Amino acid sequence: EGNPIAPATDAAAAAASISHEVTFLTTELEQWIAGVLADGWSRGVRRVQAEGERGLQGFLVERLSGLGATNALIGAALDTLREGSHDLGQPWTWGDVEMSALAKALRRGLFPLHVAVNKLDLAPAGVMEHLSLDVEATPCLADMELALRRADAAGLITYRTGDVDFDVSEDASLSDAQRAALERMRGALTSAGGTGIEALLDAVVFDTLDRIVVYPVQDEGRWVDGEGRVLPDALVVPAGITAKSVAGRVHTDLEAGFIRAVDGRTRRVVGADHQVEDGDVLKIHAKT
Image 1 (cartoon, rainbow, N blue to C red):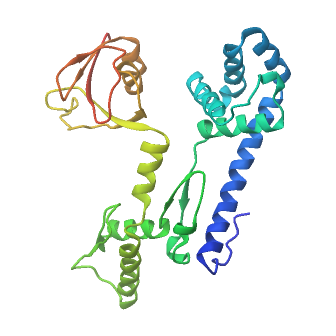
Image 2 (image 1 turned 45 degrees about the horizontal axis):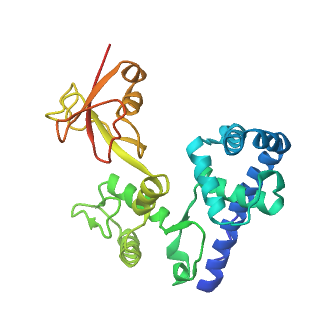
Image 3 (image 1 turned 60 degrees about the horizontal axis):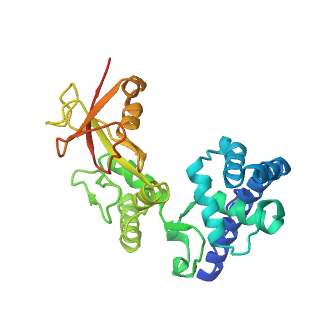
């Protein structure tokens, strides 16, 4: 219910508590997906009998499109399902076991999870070593990250997200209690190897969600916009996105009138279907 409870007394108990919460969440999601599929499954089975694999994939996309399902996602989930079961049989013979396995495979694509193991400084030592999950997990210290950012903004310390230490400003007016608090935070920060927030966000965005960063510019030679700002925008986009689709992320008119793009690093002209890569700098030419 979100109510705070006392910390676990040992690492194994703390890890078990985390595993219980994650299992509860994943099970709820999978049962929800299974329920969505069950409503209309008889109609879907008839479609499969008539159209085969294409019918199954089409039915699943239609049922789950509101959850973000795509043909590629459904296809990957079906491949995962078949790899994990050699005796799957035909869809019209599937029972609760097969439908549960399908829902689990679909959940991984529709709702990829990455657990933030927060408040690591309050947990028993060794909790991460005892933790065994089916999803990725990153330890972090969110409260400390917030406190350090606020102290940095106030000019009391110099700190950047991802740092494993900070410098106290020479002209900072701090009480003895504040200095003691900062030293306690320094010890916890150094021991943990940072707050983990940057590592968490990087893992979620670039690994779990498979995103890349692309930089649209007006001048591919100087990498600036119309006001002379260097790399003014950074777009976080799906891996495998095309140059034309990147244009659409900047403005729909650029996508509609797309002519070509220029790679700012190589000066090579690329077409609409060119797949951009992480870190690409693009100048987009379009009809206006």
